[in-house]
Image (cartoon, rainbow, N blue to C red; front, side):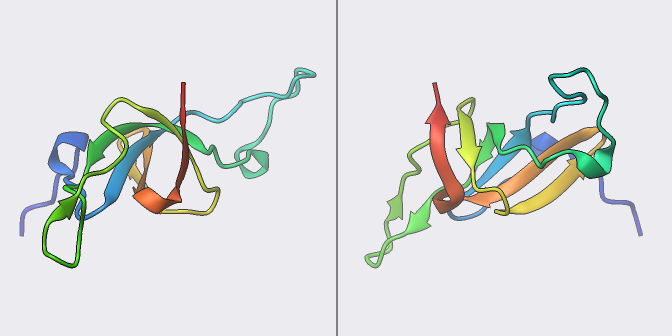
Length: 103
């Protein structure tokens, strides 16, 4: 069986799902102390890299997502599924878990 090779271009979210590249968390505190991985908070900001086609309405039509690829978004702290592709971290979220677009 061949190994599955995942990359951003091969991941296509379904329904109202959004694929977000997570911004890196802070490596050190304001006082200059370096944080170990276990002490870092999970980032809640990232950039949208892929979108699903939208949720189906009762009449079968699709409801477009309010965000677009390239938007920087703020999302719920414990939302979504964490995915690591190479050295980059991503999260697959439902659109309802996105709290705001960062301008």
